Length: 198
Image 1: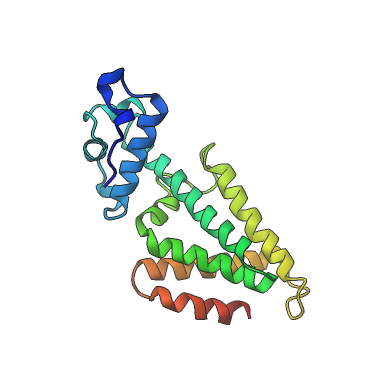
Image 2: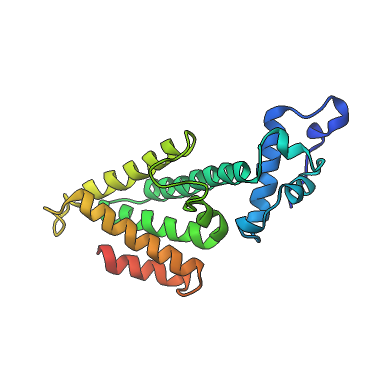
């Protein structure tokens, strides 16, 4: 459970705008680890953050606004996991494999946050928020760059980058969905990705 620091206590002169908003988002993310987005309430988020039940409304007009913010945080975390995995891998095949594995492992570790990233009620395809759009672009660029490097490798040359990117994302996303729904163990992801890209 997220606990508020002394520096965020109200009596000394109120909350600092950014600190309270971050505390509310952190409390909501904490809830999201064990609760679906559909069951998260602003009242419970306020309770977790240690503030009055009206406090969230000063930063989020409604529950949907909070969930949109959590979707952005989830997308940023998913992207970061992939970027770190790619940076730690060597060779085009290994980097594509690492990217896919990071995607699936993030989904397995944070299934509710992962689901929220792709929930059309909070991130409609084709009309992302100003905060979400650059994250989506970075994610698409990361995949495209790694696939472009892959198609220069022996055995992959001549393949269409856009088509292969779409095929890889579709496969990895489907695998992540199966893992989060417990139809596939997360341990199956690594050999499956090896079979896919090697």
